[in-house]
Length: 321
Image 1 (cartoon, rainbow, N blue to C red):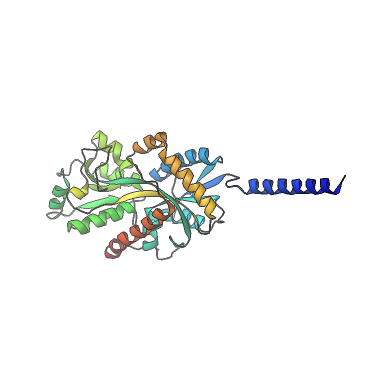
Image 2 (image 1 turned 90 degrees about the horizontal axis):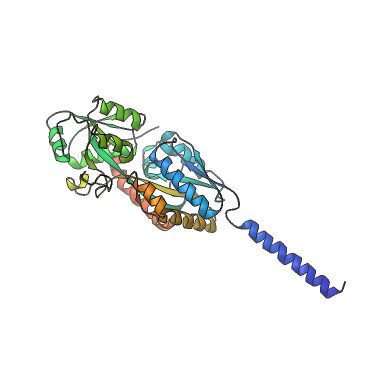
């Protein structure tokens, strides 16, 4: 074998090894874990599973859902914040994990800005103000007027939740007082409102929609700036209280320090998933509005949400251990 042939063989082997190394380094090369920081069955879980399934197709690797509930979403979020920043652990975040909990919790398990790399905002989900039909009100204004003449209470899924703070913002903007009755989840809260133990509830629209459609609950207003497409006859609260707006949102985050190429691939897969007509149809079933974004837009969204909720949390004196 001549020296030139040997050199060519060595060069070819080196190139082959280089190509193999590049191929091995391509992201993703194994399944990705999507941590959903709430129990299975809620709207965040439903959104997460829809998105995970479609992103799996786009990425060529399975996106495996892992439910890590507890502490209003903080346990799951903290788990992702501390995970290896390699792109293989991501979080389905919400307004609770990235705007409210950091303001409310005395012990901060993570920093919503410094400990995460934003990927994409996904959807906005309306909340709804609803009452037991036995309460003699049919509009937001009638509820405000009644509250000024007799004591009233509202139920929510728990202290410090987006639904609790939707109620606190409503009270502040309407200039009224309502007693907050916290429950351990939307299910028990709905049960007592349906039984007229508590007359008023702030709830996720997907959770309450069946009872609204059946007439067991009377919807007075949705919390988004505009009416929800699934209930076009229900006014927005903002039609009575201009500027009132709350909603639940879902977004994807990775741990801080995740490689840019992984963030880019995840963002591309998320945008492709949210542009899929089949995904859009699934989201419409529970009035979710698709708002897929760039990582930079998500970062700005989080800062704006924290700035919005800080005075509400402060004025309502809400804090949790």
